[in-house]
Image (cartoon, rainbow, N blue to C red):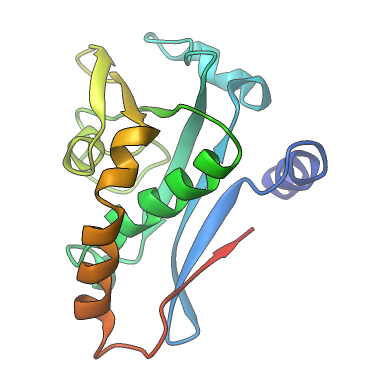
Length: 162
């Protein structure tokens, strides 16, 4: 109930704050993001605060059956595209450097693999950043890979805003 209330408030005040990825009309993953002002608990992280020119990538999840196929990168690309249109310069996230199983914090290794760089190191929760200008440069590669990857899975993969 709390998360639903939070999403409703952010939608009303700021706009779309997430994406859901569908394969064959079935939701298989999601991502949530918002400016740091909407994520007050983020100040509890030892590498806080998120930079004022960035939006915080809070959490993401992908069905295990669809991991390792490039959808994690596609989800980040969808967020980057949305935020570029809104005039933001970067996405920041607190990575989990000791990730072993699904949790709220995104694995640091995944963030690194999709283009994030560590801006404030920490043994458990490094703060990581993706410059949106650099994210745009791999857009065509990601779209081409997605077409090849999901061509047999569905006719039109869909990332829908929350």
